Image (cartoon, rainbow, N blue to C red; front, top):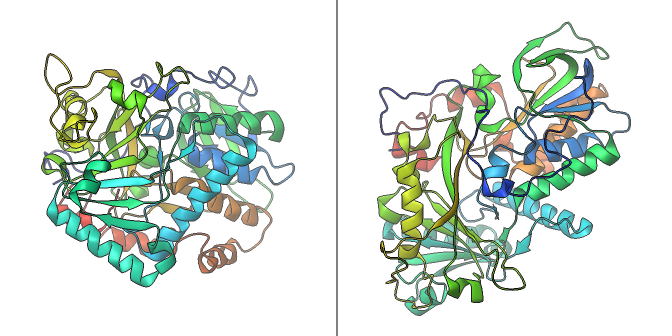
Length: 491
């Protein structure tokens, strides 16, 4: 069960982002250009498109929108740029191939390769590294391992080419070589990368502001949205902020876990879930021989499969004495309400934080002993934390992102609710929504563009927002209501 206290903690609308969040490790070196940035001292009165949110979804959407010459795009951010989920996540980018239907897996793979190509083309300094060993999903429950084996087999039957990049490991010697000697088995995917998501998004935003005309307004929370009388050429939405109002033909929300503050019709369809993250100091052996894989740990300490823990290691400096932090997140079963319907990231969950400090030496060979038995400090098997923080994810009731036009709300668009998997989904999802906005702004039939995108595989059909999908999703168990959600959600 995802929620400790169902009776008193049902789904409710989200609040505005906390003005005093915990300090993320990724923000240790904030962009001097973006910190406290307001492209214009005064808030503009009008725009063609207003993008709400400055994380990976907002950044990639703005990139697509600004391909249109002369389009006036304003980005509104409640806090500092990229201070939400993107700037607080685990630093992974990995398509989820065997857990998903073929169209979703192919889309996530395309998203991964697009980000990789963009970073390589521009030599973006964001610590991007495709892992030589790929991504290792370590299973500590035989039941979940059996499920994963079945899913891998199904993938390999329906798409042999994609399935060839995924393999099952159960041999004990190979598990030890993967540094997971106590796991019952593992699934290894060839494609996986690590990065600083904040540095990637910061580079994109800086470039768009300096070269493409993006107007970014930080510390400008949006308080409400209201319709205006509209036509093809006049504003359709009024955006009320803490600093005044803007009218715009289109509004794109890339607000993820905070979406229902502005779109109450998505209450219980998009639910905030707080995640715990840590930057752990690294034992000397892993400074000498850094990890060759990213890791997911499934079924540890009785946690449900959708409550996985996740790990990447930051690059080690050329001197070998700096960097290399173990970016370890998860432990949601130990958190207050297991994180569900918690939308404040201004504090950590002490039990979840302790779990992260103590759990990693149990599931990963961090010393090279390969027997899973280590003693790291005077207090036992515990790694010290350089930094601990929280972040707010947006979970979808049916397990899929909500991407496209908001029903019965002309000029209102959404790309959100990645259910803990923003990095392999958000960039192309938001760019798809941006392409619909560009079509609608030219009085073209954006629905035709959407249909063509589904047919061509540019967006999975299950991501598209429709009134019918919303109605069907409302019939599913609420997030936090039952373990049946495991049938709908894979993280």
